[in-house]
Image (cartoon, rainbow, N blue to C red):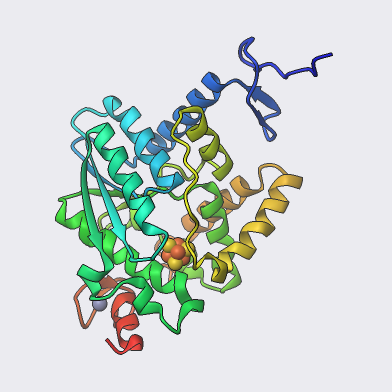
Length: 306
Ligand code: SF4
Ligand code: ZN
């Protein structure tokens, strides 16, 4: 006897996904439509994209950024006169980056999207592998600071008005907890999209309501899933531990990640304009907007003796 295959809650097709928090099964077509609707809704309710925007998509070539570019490209006709550009940062991580950079190039070529690449070597004088030698345990924090800078430079060079990143619900929920663990309330409530100083290119995260698992399913259903190598420095990341902790909670209590995000948004609203929200200054060395005397990149340069 054939085991019972669940049927989509919205049609009679076999289901491929079970959404535990909503207690419903979805077929491939309805699941794809659901993801596209939720991304469009996040963009609309948070006014992430407006007419005449030139949106730079941070395209690493990995799963999240690939899904982001595909989804934005699919939704593009909704927003008249909005343009997409893809920016790939090559940190210089041997045995890892080459393949994702290639994947990014193939995707932009297929979709006909303008693509710019920018490397750590060109921008900071060395690859991440060289910069990290002897400091591997700090890999992700150093990489994060430099990559953020590289993306901003790339977006500025491309004349972008928005910078879209592929952070998903899991990433965002992990960041909320990590900032609380570190006691970093300023970072918890920092939201460059809400910055009114005009010093930042606003960063938007259209996938912040879509889980990592949903992104993987979306890519598989759309035939763009590819097994890619993992960054060799991931093993040093604190995020890894937080990730497995939150996954456990999410499994036992579906909706935990979404609730974490809602809590963060409430705190953000309460803190707007308060002492916790940072006042912006200009970096003493490079003039970039920052909260202290020096920006993170210049602080890092100083500590690396560069
Ligand atoms: Fe950079 Fe860490 Fe991501 Fe590797 S895992 S690309 S070092 S942030
Ligand atoms: Zn600086």
